Length: 89
Image (tube, rainbow, N blue to C red; front, top):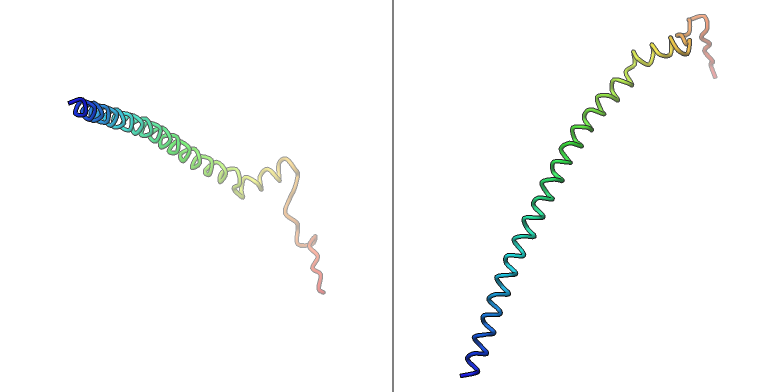
């Protein structure tokens, strides 16, 4: 009879530990899902910022803007035809 109680007690311990394991695994899964959602949101925000930065880079490097700054701030100009020298090797 004591052998049956030992087996029964062992089965109860195994079932309870298995249930605790399932609960723990689900809890960890939910925590990881929350982290995944946060990282996805951060990725989306970084993608939006990357697009804005690409647009800004395009605006800053526009040929007309560079030419205007060269003319106004650096006093540069396009060379005249008479100032051009062609070297023939």
